[in-house]
Image 1: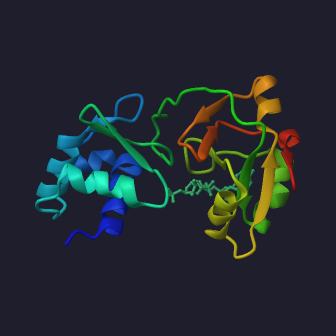
Image 2: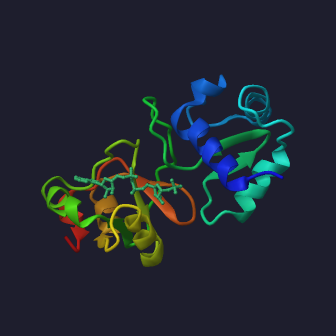
Length: 180
Ligand code: HQG
């Protein structure tokens, strides 16, 4: 029986953080060949018999859409920490985006805006509930920040589409952030 949660974590690790451990090389948009990923998982990572249908099952059933498969390739849609930045499609964002974070980060966010920290992009959510869930990973009583995304976009700050719930940016200046 496949442990889909563990498989999802391993695929996240391979595609976001350490593709070289799987002898994979991401293209500029983060894609790798599905068969190469499966072969690495089977041969070196003790996942005998893992199939593309298992990857499809993860995508179909998990709470967040972390990966997509297209034309024999798979990629992570967000979350990367690799040195080589994955190119995402710049796109006009919704009027408002949300970011849930820990209380202890607020003074620094107020001073310098939202910065990428360990990841390639700042991550924002389209809805309050998702942002609060993200914030709860770091603080049981997270702070909800409201991002005036459309205004920032109109004033030249690039935004990128991640998935239907996640948007990305290189940096969000403090002046576009309410709730601090
Ligand atoms: C904070 C998960 C101090 C920021 C989630 C956040 C998400 C600052 C932390 C995705 C700061 C970075 C990403 C500043 C930002 N001073 N702290 N100036 N600017 N921060 O994990 O957004 O489950 O890299 O508030 O659901 O928490 O893995 O980002 O707390 O979508 O699929 O620095 O990861 O998705 O933390 O989470 P992260 P995130 P998965």
